[in-house]
Image 1: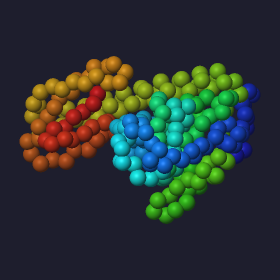
Image 2: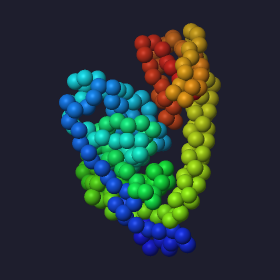
Image 3: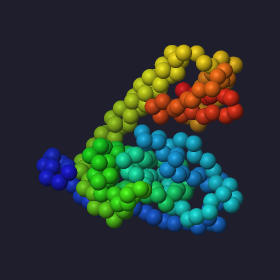
Image 4: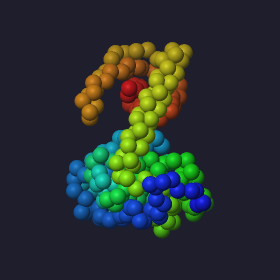
Length: 236
């Protein structure tokens, strides 16, 4: 992205100038029971954090990194997977995830969107090392150029627009996925309706279906799902 002309009121600096990569390690014995743990498997390619569980005593066997809701979580393993998210809670994460704390002049949501854009993901992929398990070095990441409006309010305005675009994209993908599920040839028989109250208070309902023949079922377009026993559960 070098050589890109700057707009009036914009700046370009290396990531280390606008944010800190904080690798504050914590040993398994020091992690309090009930602490939220985020692994790479909990960050989806659309930037959502799903399926996070609390740490039980003795469940963690290696060092982790501390993070807070002020951090951006950046998956350094296979960066082409775009596992970059902004948590709404404090916790610990896998050491394959880098907690990035934006400095005072950088809005966290803006920086998350910036790092998730295709050009930055492609750059991270090219600069990774390792044949089977490519990883991006923090030293390399902190030198990435960041273009941003100097005005913090303008950063927040841009981030808010992109947040809305992301939300609309997820809803559209979920609608397409549900259409595929419910328009498919019926190999499931509905055995009732289940419901659940989400963290934001939304009450959701979905069909609980029992398998009638051996089939395989994928999770289309990142829609959260689980299969327990003979049931398929779809979250909408």
